[in-house]
Image (cartoon, rainbow, N blue to C red; front, top):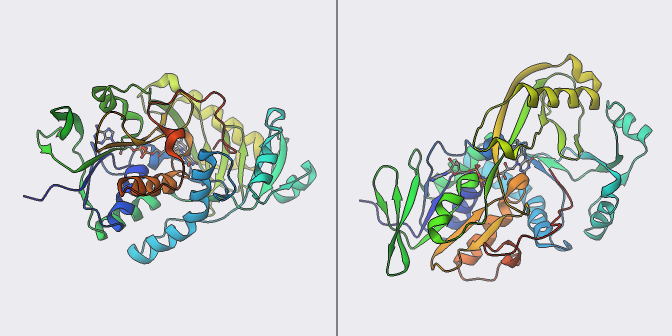
Length: 374
Ligand SMILES: Cc1cc2nc3c(=O)[nH]c(=O)nc-3n(C[C@H](O)[C@H](O)[C@H](O)COP(=O)(O)OP(=O)(O)OC[C@H]3O[C@@H](n4cnc5c(N)ncnc54)[C@H](O)[C@@H]3O)c2cc1C
């Protein structure tokens, strides 16, 4: 029988997998349990937008985490490619963000972070991209990047395997074992008991049911997002308008996202209304997309939290139990910072970001805002 892992990770999405890879590289023996296939939930469904950021000048912990992602994605992508031969499709394609009047303060945040941007006139924007009469003030963001989520996840799984991470897909965690006021094991859906030195809960939108027995109800909940994939002529940069965006993949495919539907609960499916809304948005934003073919559509369940910020750190009241969940709209861009902080925390080292802002027992932060919404 295999020896107990140092760290048992519940959930093989981008948060669990990136953490597993970083922990294994730091010398820990790691096992990942997923109730389904690895990397097939929100992390697979996402658009892969990685906005620019600067960890050294970020004003808030969330912008710092995003900045770590922005700065370290190129090096992690190269490392994964060298190690596994899998290209995750990371590229700095640039973006144009169209800001609404209520976002008037956002460029000041970018300036404070020394993020490169350029205010465009509408005519400038139209010269650069085939856009229609789009509302909002256009700002060019040359540092905006994207990654192909399914490719990145495949690369992470392969890198984890090389680093010695043990995977148990199709094996969910359904509860904890307790002994003298401590968590002493994990009860799996196949009836097995897992004992580890530490446990990391990274089960995305499904995390709440495993937090409840630990006396925490932070309200991690699913927020459905639908995406339509088109094939045809499009923009060359990512276009961001509030919660909607257009992500050209550079190979003729263009991703249109996304709806935000907390009322859908755990029902992961597309709807005529949702896809129709996305197609209308695509057509009005980039009129040439009217000729595009609709290749497919899909939905994913973002792990929402009451203030939109993730929960990262120790589970209060329980030794050796940690959480990294609730990354809502930003789990891809926050994945590297999260994994780094978890690895530092488990090693007993100072963390790259102050985790107080992400504590499980925090009061929801009123007006918690990040410099980017996608
Ligand atoms: C449409 C859409 C667009 C998005 N676009 C972007 C974007 O452009 N940029 C960005 O940064 N973010 C984006 N996001 C958000 C991002 O995808 C999520 O924040 C991120 O994927 C969350 O990762 P996760 O690992 O926490 O969750 P998930 O990927 O959902 O992984 C959780 C894993 O836990 C497993 N699990 C659940 N319960 C159990 C259990 N009991 N036992 C074992 N395993 C369990 C699941 O099977 C799953 O594999 C988008 C999300 C969606 C849906």
